[in-house]
Length: 196
Image 1: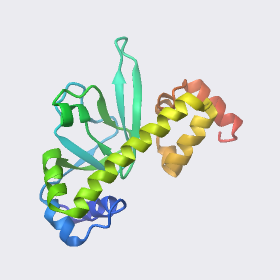
Image 2: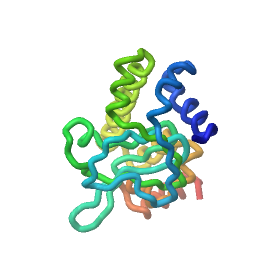
Image 3: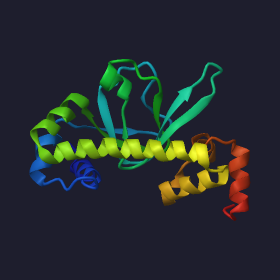
C-alpha cells in the first residue's frame, strides 16, 4: 500500500477529528485506494454501493440523468468529501444517481459496515461518523436555502466561497448545473463580476 496515500488519507480525515496514529492504524486495513481519471465513474445509478469513497485529492460530482437524457448535478464533492449512496447503505436500494470524477481524483474506500464497526469500537471513529453526517445535512440545508432564497449571482458567489481556488478546476458547464442555471447565465455573471 502506498505510504503517501495513507498519509494523505490520515491528513484528510483528521481535518474533522484529531485521529491518533493508533486510531488510524486500527482502520487502515479496511481501506482500498483508487485513482479515477476525469469522467471515470465511481459508481453508476442502479449499483448497490456498499462502500464510502473518501476523496483525498480532486473533485467529483453526483448527478442524475432524467428521462430525456439531461444531466442534473446533485452535488459537487471536493477533497475531504465523500461519495456514497445512502439509499443503498440505509435502505438496501440501488443508487438513484451516478458518481463521477471531474478532475483526476484519488479516493480511499471503506465498506460502510466496517466504518460502523469502527465507530462502535473507537470514540474518535464514532465522532468522525457523526461529523460526516452533520456536514452532509448542513451542506444540504445551505444548498436548499440557496435555491429558495438566493439569486443566480448569489448562488454563484456561494459556489466560489465554498470551493475557493479549486472552483477553477471545475468546468463552467458543471458549475452551471450545480447552481441551477445555464452555461450562458454563468458566463454573463462572470462577466458582470469581472472574472473573464
